[in-house]
Length: 310
Image (cartoon, rainbow, N blue to C red; front, side):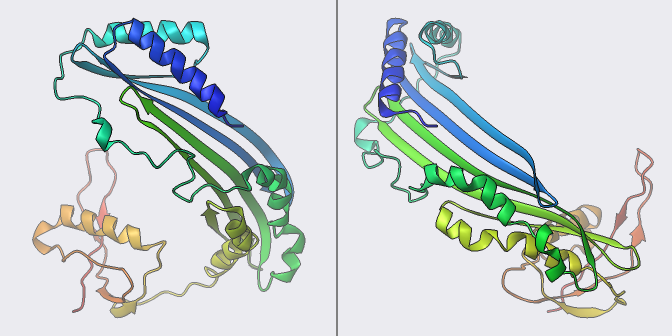
């Protein structure tokens, strides 16, 4: 569900007219509309369905050398005019901001009129919504789990598939009139597997794309990848301390930055150089765990030391 151009023109015209009557020197309006449809599945069955529509109007008001921003989701004529009237009155109470102005007309964008220039809008969006529920069921592994259960049992499979659209119209009193449209499809699954001895392992996987055709190429393998990641945890082996070559998965790489910052906070005098984990193998010497004094809340804090081998 999207606003038509006629609806947007009528809304903006009323807002500009009202702001001008109240004494605004310049105005910028931004109308944002977000539409979401979501289907959740659990163990091969539809678990929940959700539809959400969020619509908001943002006003940037320039009044007597002062500036203020306001937003509302009420766009009916009477309430909107009252809202603009009170907003202009509030701006007059603010300190002057002489350097805050709208961009000059020659600096404004002129090539974003239909909202599709960025290439992130799917023309098949309306038809995709009709396929959402069926696609969510088709992407489940639950009815076909016997084909992948090798040395483990799939005991739980939960997933969500959503289609989202975002449309943004921006117009101001200097002549700016642009639009941006964006669509996205997302799916994620979390699974739990059980080994014959009763041990449970869980993991997840997800994927997204702004276009349905690209999304369809990967959506059926998301749950299978989550199962593969969970099954890969079965039978972990203890690794003795020492110097090892380590290839860092992209899902784990961000944690190394947190690890390094925590280490620096505890021991600045012994902190290693920042670790780069992009497309390369690093060598780490994992030293023994060391306990720090109890913190004020009584919890024991611990640290690990890491050392890069040049």
